[in-house]
Image (cartoon, rainbow, N blue to C red):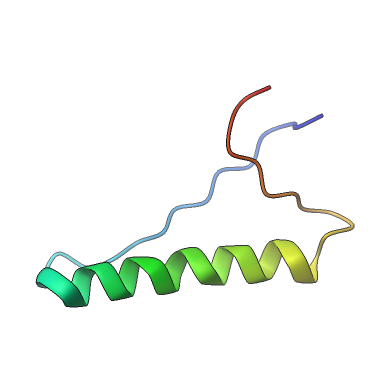
Length: 49
């Protein structure tokens, strides 16, 4: 069961083209690593079921 936790993968507006893609993927990776490190508290979900 998921209570509610929202994460934002932020990339600054001045990021251009492939840099923006790389920065976005890096931010998503940070969130994934946090959910793995704190798996006793956090869970990666992709829908609201």
